[in-house]
Length: 184
Image (cartoon, rainbow, N blue to C red; front, side, top):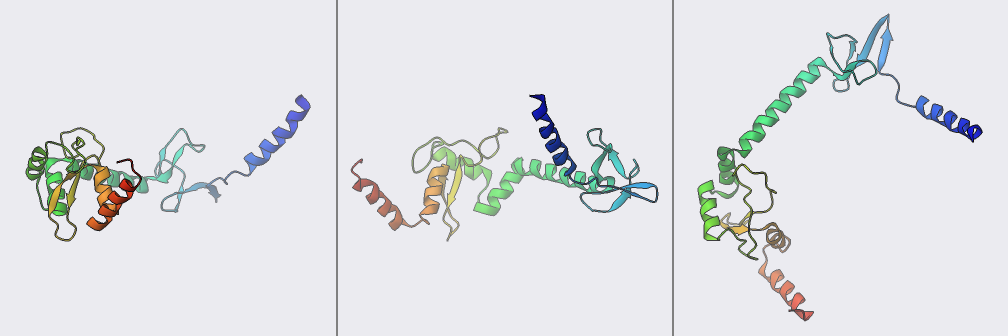
């Protein structure tokens, strides 16, 4: 049994030797490392690199300058995300896309008794209330030619209208197709 293990150890040594080459370059007695973002060679010390105990050389793969840029970008994205979820951000989105505000949307929801205008399914609120809800549970349906809001729909009904290209002839033909089977 132990005699056969030697061939597996040889294969393991072969595979491990084929791993990616070490990115550390020793040039005139100064160890340098290439940043994975800006691809610049920089001396391998704490002046240019942040520490990381999980890497084989003890430093991160991105230099300090690139890491600062990425952290600024992440902070910007987080603040933008918070704004989009705020009432002001939601109002701006609804105004831009459908030419309505949050009050009008809530009024429309109240008129429809919080149900889909086509199938009657209960709608979950995707705008506000501070709760994380599936984004596509409630959709504002509008006429693509005029831009006028027609009502609130569930995702399935809105997708159905989208596939039919808002063409009543296709919808009538689909009804006839279903009725031809005899189930209805």
